[in-house]
Image (cartoon, rainbow, N blue to C red):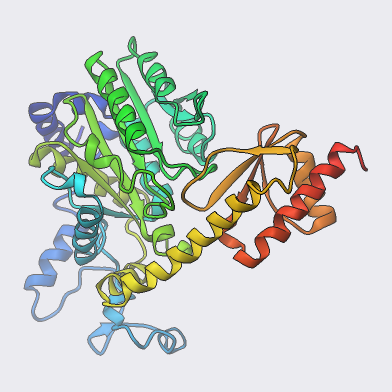
Length: 433
């Protein structure tokens, strides 16, 4: 094992031994080189006043070489903020301003020890880093039975972890914290579990209320007190899109420092929060540990990035940074929030109107981009019928669940959308070919 990796492991073992135990075999081996090309290039950037011949970019007239056919569409930006490599951990100013944003939007994080967010290539990359650093073959990844399908690829297919499911909703159609607790405690003999907390939830668009949130945290604490090392990951992809009386911040703050056997990790990003899906800018942040341990995990994370994608795209980081610093940012974001909330409320009003009889029920939703219908007929058959006869695309999940993304439908078109879905369900119910 590289001495730098060993040093990071020793730091974790000294200050937070249970977190050291959580690392996967790959996580134990990971480190950020200190004497490689990056460090030597950084030193040269500071001291090489005559010529800097260290890094693999081309320059011209003191600026990164570029094509005018590209730059002519980006004249608001200095070439140095577009064409050079971004640092593996992301633009320093962006990392700092995202941390400030996180603290402002999540009061429960105040006073907690957290790392500087590391920039990822959007949230999937951040979740993949969690898998690389903490998931070994046979480790448990605990998710509700209604979840984002990419979790299985990320943790089971890539890392060999076991997916452990529990019912998302309880008998009262609230978050099933008892099911989460039971799933966690089922790993007592293994001594380790990774739990993914995705709120608002994809696919059903549900965020727990404050009481439910406390029950979730209590379940994680109970597992830790039972001797289970818990990697508690908040997948906050749709953070901020809370339309009703639910939690208004991430559970990350409550999980930070919860127990010596709990490692809190926040994965979030601009992707959906700032409506920049194709920019691929996300973040991963660690919390609740000693400063030295947070630094060690940050270095392992950046080492992982260096060993996979080298660094994230520079232009999109620059675009996001500029937006976050603008005095127009909050007002424009609020405008989009109002539109999204209006769409969610319109869907709920339609579904509660009685117009569609008893051909479906719907799972509770109060946030995010999506909602799910629970059909009385086969969801895949309805999906196909919608495509072939009604020009409507939806997502079939399991036998009866149909996910509808109201986020991409204008409010005035929602009634027509659900009328078409209703007619397709009636067609299938009637056995029409």
